[in-house]
Length: 89
Image (cartoon, rainbow, N blue to C red; front, side):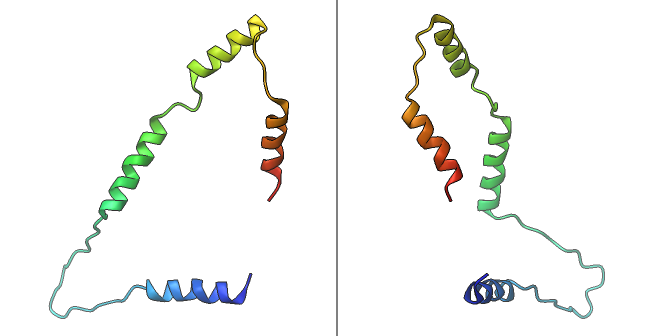
């Protein structure tokens, strides 16, 4: 890890560090958490992705049908490029 990257990370943690406040005379005060609008949008998007199916049945059915008919063709060079792209950093 580079030293300057460590310094940046350290600065982020120092900038976002929590500060304790002591309020005199407020016994029984309750903590409160508020979720930002961006946080709500993130939760909504995450829920939508969780509901989406992992496998697109219509695409799979069409490919199976074309394979059974013998009409399915694939560009082997494009396949090889995609496979190699996954292993090259």
